[in-house]
Image 1 (tube, rainbow, N blue to C red):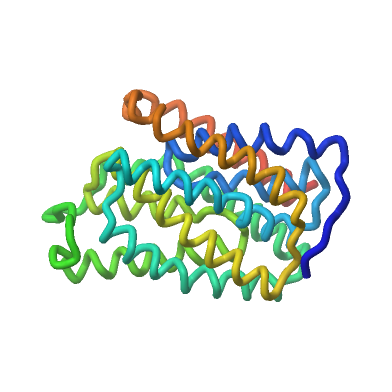
Image 2: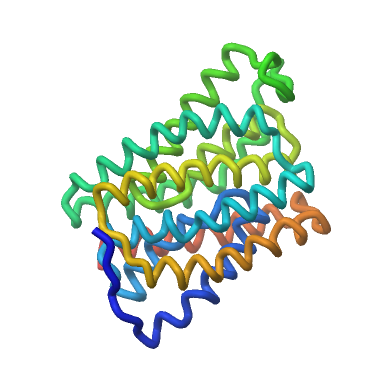
Length: 265
């Protein structure tokens, strides 16, 4: 069901929030969707299922613009992105189906547990535990069977998470890309493409089964689209390895706080 909730004064903060998340997400990988649902639920009192569907829709501009700009900057491994994203597409539809069959309280508690787990896993750096003998695949014919299994399994998990919680599913995607030994900038750019596919599929599922608020989508999406233009250019001039530690710390701390709040308040 598509409806309009009516503009409230607090909603005018949403383009700025979308812009900030659009910039940061296209610099660290993903689309920032892990922040949108808790922000909408906790600070704007948006119903959880509407917040999930709105989040997926709002990050689509980040995915489109971020993927195009990253591709032009040669930051995307296209074969890896296509295989990862294909598995995620199926998973996202399954996740959207599950989301609309859970009780709201169960959905919020599960989402809170997921955020806490994700915050703890953020401290784990998969780049330091790369599987021996793996070489970064550059075309489809380079794929080894274990690489295909890795991409399909983690891609499906990322898609289910995206459709179920309205988030990006970035964590399993980044873990898989690091395990494939891709350079940092290729990890960032390729993950933006993959989670865009997840968000698009998840939103399609929620559009058929859930509730969509067009005003929230336009306000968040407009700011996110502008931010997605800026992020890849900043990344091309930055040294992500130098800033990785403090970015992971802040990111995990925010997720931990949001997860605890969703469960206990």
